[in-house]
Amino acid sequence: AVRSCLWFTYRSGFDPIPATQFTSDAGWGCMMRSGQMIVGAALLRLKRAELAAAERGTAEGTRAAAEAYAKEIRALGVLAEEAEEPAEGTDVPTAQVPAAQKQGMQ
Image 1: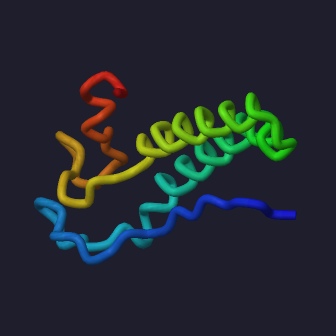
Image 2 (image 1 turned 90 degrees about the vertical axis):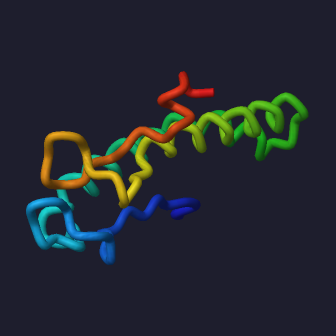
């Protein structure tokens, strides 16, 4: 049974990428989405054991699950994109590192 699923989809409605008229990544964003989905799925698999401990209802398991969840949220933040900020030196936007990671993954 599916318990959770990460959903990465095409973006649209952003300002045109410099030197192009692209306001959507439909048609070429599939490589970025595929990579994001692979990394996201791997992160979910790595956390299953910790989350299973919480489902058993132990205090240690609950604490481990909370820590795992916090790590997962930080890790998934790496996959987030900032639509207004294309990567330097490219004409296509790529996954941008969130400010928290730029400052040492607080």
